[in-house]
Image (cartoon, rainbow, N blue to C red; front, side, top):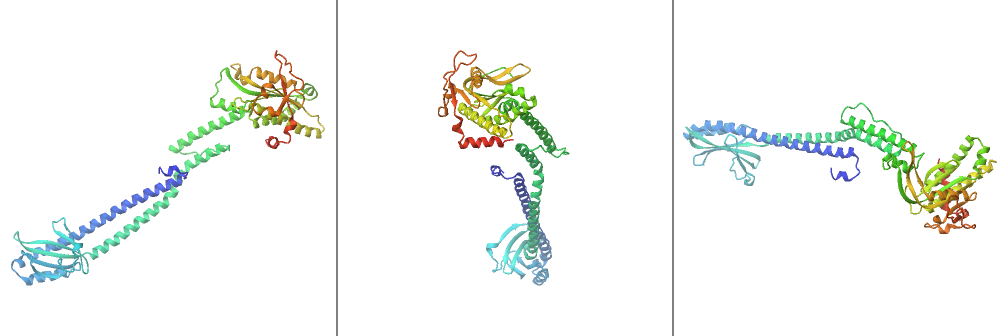
Amino acid sequence: MKRLNRYSIPLAIRWSIAISALVTAAMGLLGWFLIGQQQSSYKLQSDLLGEVIIDQFTRAASEPLMADDLLSLQVLVSGQERNPLIKGMQVLNHRGEVVVSAGVQPLDGNARDEARQSRVTAGGIVAESWISADGGAISYRKPILFQDTRVGFAELVVDREPLERELARTFKALVFTTLGLILVGVMLAVPLAYRFSRPIRQLVAVGEAMDRGDSYQALPPGRGDEIGRIYNAFGRMADEIVVKQQLESTLSRYISPEYAAKVISGEVTPAFGGIRSEGSVLFCDIVGFTELSERLDPEAVALLLNDFFRYFAAAGHSCQGTVDKFIGDCIMIVFGVPQRDERHAFHALTCAVLIQLVAERINQQRVAQKVDPVLFRIGINSGAMLEGNLGSHERMQYTVVGDTVNVASRICGLAQPGAVLLTEESARQPGMREFVEPGRGGPLKVRGRSTPVQPYEVDIGLFRGDTQIQESLDAIFIKP
């Protein structure tokens, strides 16, 4: 069984093999025991027959042998020989000389000496099995006593063939019966194993369905044994998993899926504070949103934002970014937080390009429908920031704060419609130099910050013909 455990063999087949092996071993031992018992019974019956006959003969032959009455002894020998089971008989005097004999003799020259097997019966008579010229035989030898004095010996030769034929028939019957029972046991082992393993297969099916995300199927009720208790425990665990999945799915709509998973698993504790991290922050907002909101109803504004932001969020996820929050008409995406990413700036740049290309494609549809296009501006900054919980004990938010975040928000407001503007800190990150160039206006004064910021611009046209960008763009629109 340990060797079978190394391979992916279904449990029912393993149990079938185990049950079949157990049935085979049990029936084999039982057959071996019954055959041994039958052989012992055969010897016992043969010895009993020989003891009875030779005992009667020695009593009848004691007086004639003492009186040297050869005629009477010959009559006794000839009378015993008429028994179909007796193959021969002889009487010997006290010197071991044959007095009278009839039929096959134990010391016949045709006997095969190498086949002789001597033993003492339960009655104390010496029995010797051997093979004569016409088949198997057993000879029995017993002293002839007259008034407790040994006057000779009597030897009886019994034919083994009838008893051996009966033993052979019994042996065949036992063998075929044992083989039949083994075959029946093996045939029953398969359905029994599959029946025994059915509850486990049901548990496996439910577990695999849950892994695939299929709807939870309840286990069959009504069992009061150990399997029933396992069903109940598994059902409770499955219900808890379903609730956890629903909670995680709902929570991931309000916070990042990565952080939602950490909250559900208990990796993140609801405490204030945080850790310093290196990453990039992307801000994207609508140009002229105040005027747009003035012209449209609130429902139309919400619908417009949702139409754009769902694609922008998909672009962020495709570039290993995490949507931190939606602030009115602005979406904030962070890279390298909470999942560490050495190329966070490059992924932020790729995400910004995808967002602008997504906006272009949607605006083409809006223009075709004779609706005003909506333009977006994007700002990116990279550097150190603090990630952690902010807020109150009643309500908190996991986000990033720091000068890096503030600068990203400020340069977003300085970017031109449809453009991507990033800082020198982002431009210095690995893999960025070939895609960005310094802004033509020189350093910019950022509101609320004493040090000016050197902006860098991105030529989105460089990415329009890129195959991977187009594939990513198509994948974003395919996603529901």
